[in-house]
Amino acid sequence: MREIATKEEYDSCSDPGIVLGPGVRTELNSTGSRFFICTVGDHCEQGQKVSITVGSPTTTSSLLAPPPP
Image (cartoon, rainbow, N blue to C red; front, side):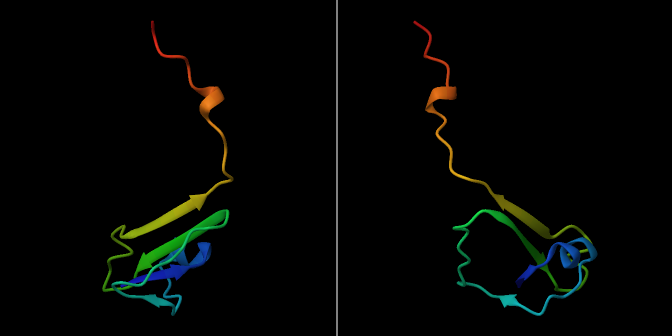
């Protein structure tokens, strides 16, 4: 099971008490960081955790170089 955690809970692998099971969707539709950990056994301590940072939308077309001739 995955859990949504605070940064502190993520860093220390502390159980946040919010459980997401199979088929549960979490939308990342606002900017900021989200932290997910696994609280099964020592999975989190072994690295089974992920942080996702959502930034503001940008237009990258002006940053791309033109294709070679």
